[in-house]
Length: 326
Ligand code: PBG
Image (tube, rainbow, N blue to C red; front, side, top):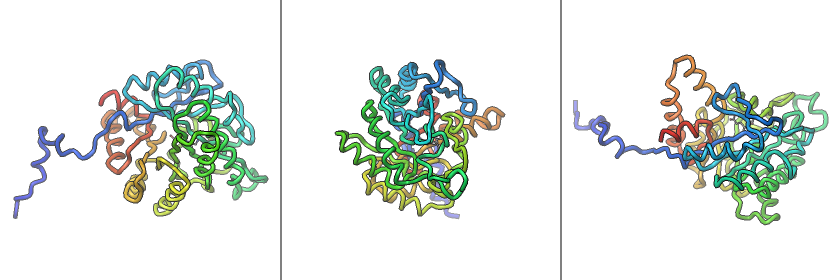
């Protein structure tokens, strides 16, 4: 046996840091923040231990807590005071996200990203305008083209409130282009768009739907979110968003889709983001609660693996916990 090649030589404590290929840093992480217009105190989110929905007047304080851990960026989600069939509170000047963003921008120096979608704002919980008759017919859902205008209006209203970046998540065909041109028309040519470019119809979003109260009242999202069986299709989705002007490309969820993260990294030069979603967070917490996993270790390993696969940025509910220990 030729034993001249011994990979273990590079695993001693002294040399491991020198040959480490991937590093996690607080500046790679984006912390989700939920702002709720229906409450005046913090409401714990049962399925996401450690996370709460905060009232508008605590949004800035919540973001300051994030910043104290070293995490510099947040993504803001809103729970509106009321919902209707079009989701009109999504683009209202005095909507929950608009009010919260103004406060956050005034009182902190966080980098503020907003999620642009209608599902938290519509009474039916779908990510856009539903077609007539959709309630009765499971084969009908969101009217793609009528939704574009509403998404563009929502993104522009976030920009006007002071958001630094907008992140459309509705998987509406053409959403990036529609938002880009509305932003440009209103003088926000320099505001970047992070597209949820390859977003799958995933069962891992369960806890988020508790957190943001956006579960569809009928049907599901398979007519607009991607089939988990498809990897190559993600390259076509991402290429379209690139053509439409996306600045950052996001894959969501993260851990079950690391092959897609790696492929996007290889095929595109844009910054790649991955969303380590609510279910990925909840399952590690649940196993740790049973004493089956070491939470600190698996959280760190998860984020490190997402970076190793090729992500530059990670949106994660572990942001603060992991950043505190870096
Ligand atoms: C849509 C949106 C969702 C998430 C982020 N933006 C929900 C969905 O598509 O059902 C999920 C995030 C998570 O599970 O952590 N506004």
